[in-house]
Amino acid sequence: MKMNYHKEEVLLLPDWSKMPTEMLEQVCKLLTIPNLARFITVCKSWLSANTSKKSYHWIPDAPWLVGNDSTSTQFQVISTTDKQAFNIYKPFNPLQNTAIVGSSKGWLILRSDQSLFILNLFSKLRLDLPPIRTMSCLLCSKGDDCFGMHTPVAFTISMCPNMNPTLVAVATYKGELGWYKVGDTTWKGYHTSDKFYTNVTFHDNKLYVVERGGLKVNMFKYDEGVLIQVGSVVSTNPIEHIPNLSGTIRSYCMTIYLVECGGKVFVVKRFSDDTKFNTPTIDFIIFVVEENSTTPQLVKVKNLDDHVLFVANLNIECLDAKYCPKFQRGSVYFTGYSENSFTNEVGMFSISDRTIHKIPLTNPRCTLHLQFG
Image (cartoon, rainbow, N blue to C red; front, side):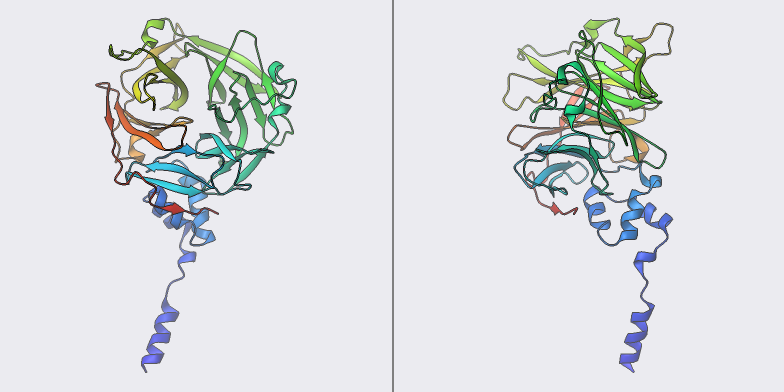
């Protein structure tokens, strides 16, 4: 009798792999990145729920790339929600001599000795890109390597409604602008002798490119295989771009980002103390690209309203605060790492009072290993 009762219970157990997709998508929205990594390994339907376009705009927990050693089988991310560092095994081959050289909208751009490709960690979708030597710009005409293993590279992705990449744009360490249309076999380049581009982003069917120094942003449109400049915005007050430093800081280094935020494009400048070994972050200055005003210009902003910025050495993302309620709206959360691939800072910059608050990790050493494939 007991045996029959046990068999009936077994038969009544639900098949969790057949849960409605809409329900699984709602579950995804409640999970932090580490828990999501476990969630998507349960079965194909749970993986599919996370990679659907309905759940794309959700990032409740923001892990940032903080360590990147091409000789290691792992890279490191930080979760400020859990206040922990995590190791993730590199989900690509070959493992050795493969470096992450940038990230955008949940995608990583990677380079090995033989190839260049972008990868979505959670959907496991990989898109191989043409060799960078195919870029038809002046400085690359001899097949020079434009990326450099130790220099940050900015890149951005334009996606169609189903969230598949359609265009990829990059700014190389030599200041060249290149773009690739999915399906082509080569990169195309845009070069002028008097410009040095440092960062790129897509917005409103246009490519925004910031020049060295961050005082000018150019806008381009991709039309029938040709990149055409359609406008530019210049800062009318260069003094606003100088950080307010204490007397003890003798020199600083600057990293410039471009990001879409609330329907506009922003130039974000991050300043680090160049006199210290780990070059800690000391200030942020943010400008909005006002291209539709009577006098197009870069305007310094004092707040981001209901948005939150997440900044790492190689990438920047902006989210509506309603998608990340555990974070302080109108703030910049940032991480940094040193050459030895160890985290040297995790912090929050308050735009309103211009103060930096360090975020201590409960266990700064890697405590969890997540296997994505």
